[in-house]
Image (cartoon, rainbow, N blue to C red; front, side):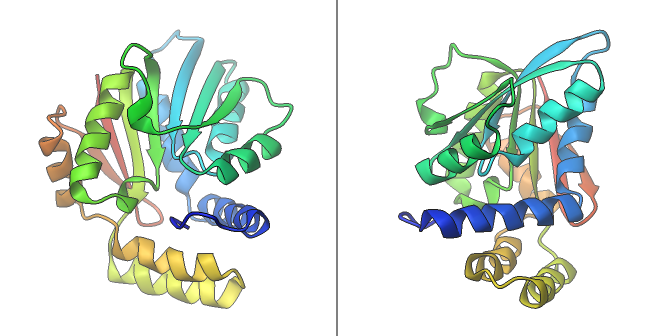
Amino acid sequence: MDASGLDAAELAETLRELDFLNAALGGYAATLGALERLIPPGRREFDVLDVGSGGGDTARRIVDWARRRGLTARVHGIDLAPEAVACARQRCAGLSGIDFTAQDLFDLPATRKYDIVHAALVLHHLPDDAAVKALAKMYDLCRLGLVINDLHRHPVAYYSIKWLTALLSKNRLIRHDAPLSVLRAFRRSGLEELARRASLPAPKISWRWAFRWRMIVYK
């Protein structure tokens, strides 16, 4: 999926399957639980920068989660792939509080701050040096905190997702990228080292089902 020039229809199908996998395996729950910890009691509205927003499913769930609690969320999703941004806009059409742009994280001005900066399943796509720069940039853009939601590199996770996608998916990108993502993923010490190199305060890292790391860095 990191390749450029993917067929739009195939990408849309892939993003739909990723949404299903994230929902089934607890990926969204890890993000929403972090928001609950970061938003101060009594705060009625907040804004989020969603880095690597893909098909917009996380943005949609954040807005829905906030609405159920009587809160107002505004989510700005950015993604390097214009095709993904087009898909996200289509899937979130008519929902207030959500917008998407095809934009590079490093092009965002330092003066534009967000209460929470969030990135799910993004960091493992980056080489270590780029991941360090991305963490530093994201932390600089947040007011309350930074949330990283990413995969745990573990043999059980690798063979489980390889078996599940081979059994349940006919999508070539899912079948190839899902196991590869686990191989590129993190152990706790790896996340801690990236945060240290980015000069972040001590992160709060917790393991979430199924084989996810949730890292919260408070401002």
